[in-house]
Image (cartoon, rainbow, N blue to C red; front, side, top):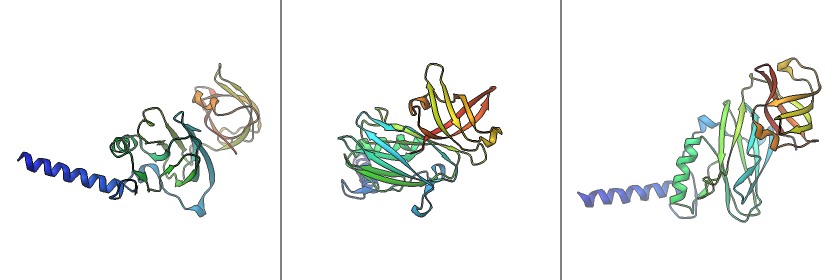
Length: 236
């Protein structure tokens, strides 16, 4: 009985390695992902815009937060500025954690699915993805040790009907009061004409992503009586 259990365990591990690594260590691997939850592979001909993402050896993505509108197809141009191999993998938090455990067992694997890309030092890769559902889509580097070190981020997918995007220019960033001064165009969902005004921010981390003079796209809502920026991204 013990011999049979051992044989079955070895067979299961072999099948797992084959399904993730394409049967040979170092080959690209493809596996199921929660496409319905995080969106679907995008078509290059239907890309709405390009988002530049930089990966560094301090185990961070820049930016670590990206805002998109539901239905948008985004081309992520992912650059590895470090000396180590890094990855950009879109997924649910559970999926990323489960995949990370597998990567620790099989660190030689490289990705072949459309929601992920492995990038060698000094190189650039791309992921084209359509975000079909509102909510949060996580992304991370699943190289052993990198996820645990905090190399992760999130795509905030704003409902197509929840808010309207507005264009603006950053005039002042106040990290102490957690406020942002923007010269902006019309904010349709607030029925607000273009002007320069001070906003609260929903997430203080937004203030680390911008500086005076940056051109931005943003959404804003009135929360607890205060005009608040809910999503924010730099336009390059």
